[in-house]
Length: 412
Image 1 (cartoon, rainbow, N blue to C red):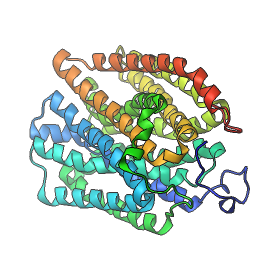
Image 2: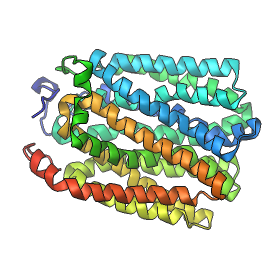
Image 3: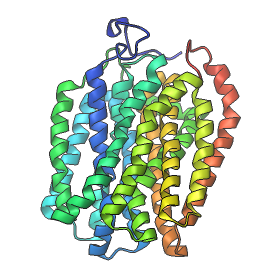
Image 4: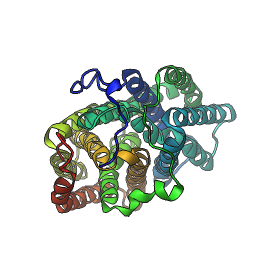
């Protein structure tokens, strides 16, 4: 069984969640994750304005909002390795400095070409890679029976996507979309200061490993299954968060501000239920939770492909985001049960898979729109991927319950 990262000294009440870890670090992880996610998807709410200014095609718009997710996916592996080497707090500080410096430079110099938006997307990928830092920063403080709640609360920082959807379009209308890049540096800098004051690395972190040892979890089929499941749950969440402003403006002719409000409602639903999904998985098991997630998510996305009104589409997107958000929490109930000693690198690997799923969904929706004149094929294919994930879950659930059953008090 993998070694734990907490000690009896860190817990006043072994069975009490709030007393079982380090609350300032949990809050710091949430704030860092929240603001990082806000800027990670920033190009989504700004996409309609940027596309008009730079005369982008639907495929270019899709690629523009998808690049940050792909860059974030790759960099999550780097950050996962860095977390296990120098610790999550210092890794997070480095990443935040890179993002703030990149956004400030983009604002000062201006972004005037499609290539420039792609370069900016790579910089924003560092914000998306915060996932591989914020989650182990919080997770290492908490025992197995509270992993779902701890990872869910820290991971609820994906609610930052709500902030981007709510405020970016209005600020762009007032000051221009390029100015939004500079304005974003203000809250990022404030959170950086709070992070440096509150965050603390957990005791008994694993000793540094060789590069080959870092990637050893990939020898396990369980790692690939968890990566695949997260590619659907988180990939669906972040892919929709980045693409919905484009969808609502193109499909129903909404203004950028109206599209931002609709997107915010959908994203808020998915963010809100992430800790609930983790808590539900703690209570009934990650497998049961994910089963419902994949069924409900597939049905909702298939329904979106046929939605003829804004009300129907919005309702179905909310249902889809509720399912996918709960699924994100459920997957990260399972990850630390199976890979507690490799939580840093596994968070990076699983997070990478989620980013790749988001890149696929966002870019495929743009291509579907350009090639067929409709977003429907993109939604239908992703609904099919959810059903494939469900079939895979049915294949592994028996083995997982037998092999992980030795973890006392934890439902798989």
